[in-house]
Length: 76
Image (cartoon, rainbow, N blue to C red; front, side, top):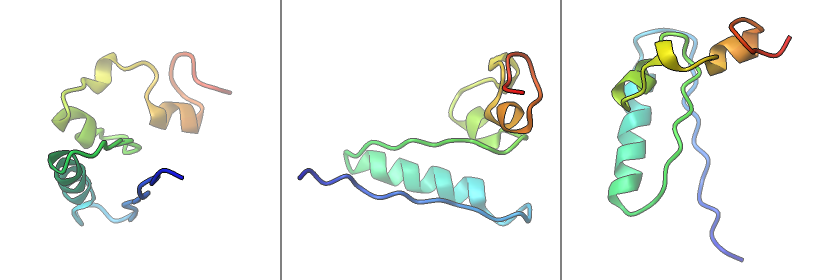
């Protein structure tokens, strides 16, 4: 069976503890090693999305909006 890799989650409710920096650093290191990385930005501030080149204002709805039931087209 093929190696499925690893799932790594950065979770902490407190702001300013480095979740975004560590997440983007790990994704960057994985990609530099020839691996694929998926970053899912659940933060309503969308810092990871900005850094990765996505404009959260044009992403309708955001993951946060879908999970909270807000935004255009979000699940009720």
